Image (cartoon, rainbow, N blue to C red; front, side):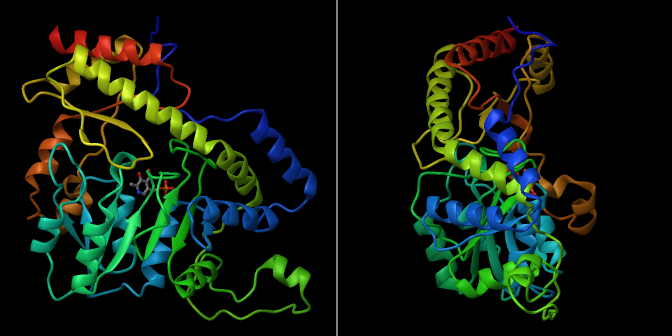
Length: 376
Ligand SMILES: Cc1ncc(COP(=O)(O)O)c(C=O)c1O
C-alpha cells in the first residue's frame, strides 16, 4: 500500500487554496509586514485561548527569548527545565545568560517534568520553571501553579505542542506557542506569546521590534516621524504573509485537533490489540492538543531495526527527544547531569505518524506493521 515513494509522514501541514488566496490578498494589498493582519491574528488567537491579548513573533524560540527578558531572568538565575524537550527550551535560558537546571520526567507513562524532582533541584538561585506540554498533553495546572507560588518562582509554559488544547486561559506567567511547519497549525515559521500581566506583554511587543517605541504602521497612521529605543530589542517580528496564513489556519484548528484526538484514540485501541507489549504514554486521560503520537518500545527491542522495517513499509518514525543534556554543547557545560527516567524514555521512545490528513485505515496499517516489525 505504501513504500518509499509514498511515505506516511510523522507530521504534515494542511495547506491549500485558502492559504494561497490569503497570501495573494497580502501581496495585492502592498503591505507585507506588521500590519492589520498581524493584529487580527493576535486577537483571534487570544480569543481562542481565552486571554485578553497575544503577541505574534517570528518563532516560538524568539518568543521564549523575549519572555525571559520581559520577566527579568538573567545572569545568576537558575531556571528549571525538562531535558525531554526540543533544545530551544533550554537555549532560551542560555540566551538570557541564566543557567538551565535539568529535571527528570515523572514516569514513562507521564513523560512531563516531575514536580518532585523539580522541588529537589531548587536552590536559593532558582528564579523560574519552564514546563513543556510534551506531545500536547497539558502539565498539571494546579500542581505547577502551587509549586511556583509556594517558592515565589516565575512559571513559563512552553506550549509549542499545545496550540488549541482544550483549556481555559493559561496557568503560567507566560505561555509561548509554535507555528513551525510540523505543529498543529502552521505559519511556516512563527510563534505567539501570551502573558497574564499586560506589562509583560507590552515589553515582549516592544522588544520583538528592536525595542522601538513605535512601528512603521503606527508612524504612517500618526504624525510622529521619529521614535525612541528604550530597551534592548531584537527582530522577532511576524510578517503579514504569515499572519494571513495563521488567520486561515486558526479557523480550521478546532476541527484538526478533533481529528487528532479521534486518531489518537484509534491508535490506543489498535496498538493495545496488535502490540500488547508496547506502552503508550498518558494512559490516563488529560487535556491535550494531541500533537504527536509517542510510544515506548519494550526494553529488549532494537529500535533502529523497528525504524528500518517501518521505513521499508512506507512509515516514517522519529524520536521525541534526544535528551538535551546528551548534546555536546550541553554535555560540555553540564557533564554531571543524569536523569534516569528521561534517559530510559528517550532510548525507547518512537513517534508514529499523527496529523489530520491520516485516516483510520492508515492507523490500522501502522499498528499492524509495527506489530509485524516487533515480532520479526
Ligand atoms: C517543545 C518545543 N519548544 C520550542 C520549540 C521551538 O519552536 P520554533 O520552531 O517555533 O522556534 C519547539 C519546536 O519544535 C518545540 O517542540
